[in-house]
Length: 426
Image (cartoon, rainbow, N blue to C red; front, top):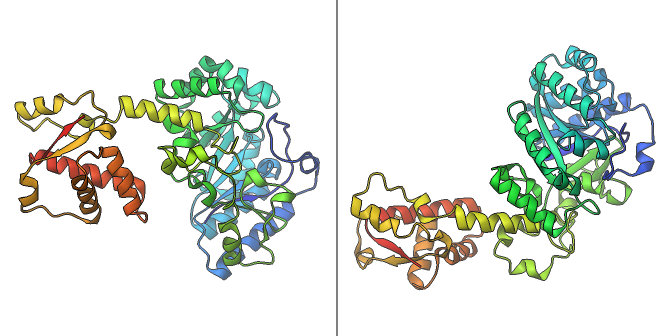
């Protein structure tokens, strides 16, 4: 399990797009003792139930509201439980030199903690949205790195980002050499991008080679599972939420004080199974990659980053996924190289495979399950494009990840091509 553990309901900022209810932010309780006590209780529950937790991210409202001593104790408790680095997601305003010195007195090694900082880019974007804290946060990021903490940055992309996109790009390039992670997240529900702004941002991502930093293109995130998403947030009062997007009283679906983890997982598994999805998504060629995105972030029943994805995927298909990208020709003869060069403008997904008659009687060709299924699909209908064949392969092997299917299928095509057993046609 991967989860958030919310150690407080208090925040020292009032960001424009914040999801935390105002009554929580104003609840100015002393959370130190409650956070440490609940962390010990949660850790003991993990041990007693022998339930595997791979990572725990400290969350809030704002987790650094805790004193440095209390935060350090919570970090140590979860570090010993998971045997992995603890993570934190913070607004970064409290990680001063004084705070970090006190924190290190408790945890000793900065490698025990990965610090995620929310910062929305350049000062022209961040300050209007996050209480004029840019200078303070940037200074604290530098201090964290000087103390050898690993740091990752999270930026929410709003219309203000698009308005100052040049500034944002310059800031991105300036922080890349400094931090260990950089993530972009599209604004939602009143702070999202218009259709034109989505396309502008997609063009910028592609041209600046920053595609991999948008959550939509990061593998292994729960959002890619659509209504079958699975993530957890636990708080120090025993409440269980699906994630921070459903944080608050209406989002509570279980109580970890009273219920075991197996029961909590069973309750969480189908929590969003009936969430509506736009009928257009069902026929979209990218549905297997997108699955309509996070069920709590959808706008008009589509992924909040639908237009960005469609724009980027179209560019990749046109400019990136070409036959020659998958079939190196360095070791082949000039004639074979010339033969392949004929298809340099042919997107691989739209190409058809022309099989040599020798393929049927070819000996020494050992195929695994995926390769065998893919070859059968291609042989069954000679008009099938490679893209269509990959879709059918996915339907034939639903238990195997898409990336594995594509890798195995393309490896087979390369083997057959190198043995002169196939060519390509438009």
